[in-house]
Image (tube, rainbow, N blue to C red; front, side):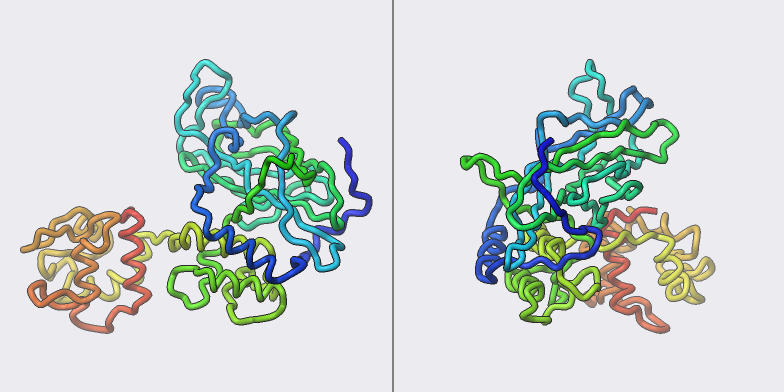
Length: 378
C-alpha cells in the first residue's frame, strides 16, 4: 500500500473545515438538493451482512475487499488548502432479508439479530461515522441495526494535508449480542482519496442525520434550501441564525452537520422517537381518562375502559360506538376515532376529550398521534 501522507493531522480533535469560497460551496449544496436519485445502496454498493451457517455460525460480510476500495470525493478544504476532508457515504451495510443463492456460504440472519461494527485498527487519517458516532480507534463501536431492517449508510472519511492523496486502511469486525452467532473475522477496507478516472463522477452524498430534523430553523418539520444555506453560513462563520444546524450543540457547524441537513432536505425529517403504549397509559390514560364517571372500570363511559391492562384491547382495531371508525386504526391517526376526539370532533361526534379535568397538552396529543402512526404497538 502506497500512502503519500507524510504528517497526518490529528483527526481525534474536532476540525472546523471550510471551503475556499462561500459561493462555490452554496452551488455544491444546491446541486445536491436538486438531484432526484435514490441514495439507497444497491447491489455492488452494499457490504452484505450474512452468517456462515444457517441459524448460527459467525457473522460475515460479502464484499470484494481486495479489489474494491471505498472511493471518496473531495468535500471541503480550508481556505489555504492546509487540510482537506474527503468523504463517501457508500458502500453501505445491508443485511438482505431473502437468500437468493441458498447454495453459497452466506446465510440470512434471524430476525431480531442486532449487529454492531467495531474498529480493530485504523490509519490515523481515516474514520468511519455510523449513526452520528465517529469510529477511529480500536474498541470504538456503533449499532448498524437489527434484523430484518439493517440498512445503514456510514460516512467513510479522510482528513489529510491539502491536496495529498493516498490509500488508507481501516479494520473492523461485526459483533452481536445474539447467542446464536459469533463475531465476524476482521475485515480491512481500503479508503482512497486518489481521484477516480476522469470519466467517473463521484456525487456528494448526505450522511445519516445524528439528531431528528437537523437545520429545521423554523420548526415546521421540513428543511428547505434556505435553511441548508443557513447552515453553510454558520459553518463559514458569517451567521448564527439557525441554532438547529449545530445538532451536536458544540458551538461549531461541521461537515457532517451540513450533510445531515442536506439529507433531511432530500429525504424528509426522521420520524419522531418511538412512543410506547406504557408511556401513554402512564402519562395520559390513567391520570386524565381512567377516572370516576369517565373511562374507569366502573363507569366505562361509552363502554370504554381505559384502565391499565384493559385500555389497549379496548382501543386498537376496536369499533367506536355509533360510527364507522375504529377507535385506533394502526398507522392511520387521521381515521382513528381516538385522535378525532382528542383534537376536537365535529358536532355529530360529541365533545372533545377529556371532558373534565385539565385538557391535554399539544405534546400529549402529539404522543398519541405518533404512537398510532408508528403502528399502535402494545
